[in-house]
Length: 260
Image 1 (cartoon, one colour):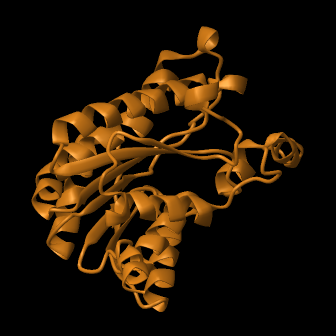
Image 2: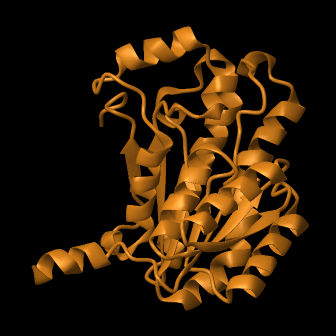
């Protein structure tokens, strides 16, 4: 019984503070809710949809959690730095940083890709994480439990089919950044990444047809698409002391769509 209790406690984030970017909807919202449910004070970041972020925080508070909503355009260096500073002012510390903010922007084959689209894909998916992480590193080092989680995409492994090349390339760069930071910040901060498969969120309502989603289900060995809560459970593992001997890892949450 004592051993079971110890394992349960390893997921506790009581007394810690977590900043989740892009936490208004989908995977980001589920991760923020999961970390708050295990005791963390949450920074719920949003870019444009303040209403969605407010809804996320309300659900956290209604469940007995605590947090703050922070709006910022993370592709702008100054706003990203201010986001971290405002969260530190409210929470007094940063123990967990989840770089979840990102989007495909628009689809384009690389042979026809406008330079501005390529640049924007990297600004939204890589530069944003770089700006926030760089500002947060001193606080994460001081934490004693520092954990960074970078959210990737299955397209890192499969390529950006259907015009998703700029997005896939940006997420690939984020994976290299993960491994680099894992070496540079050890042993004070752990840095890991996650690669979700097809997760049924508003993202796919925008970028995938119902027919394509059904095809994804048929192609997945577990015979279904994933849920945001299942990704959040994996993020909780990486954020907590349960994964205290893991850094530089890429955690697959894809139902077997990609097997190493």
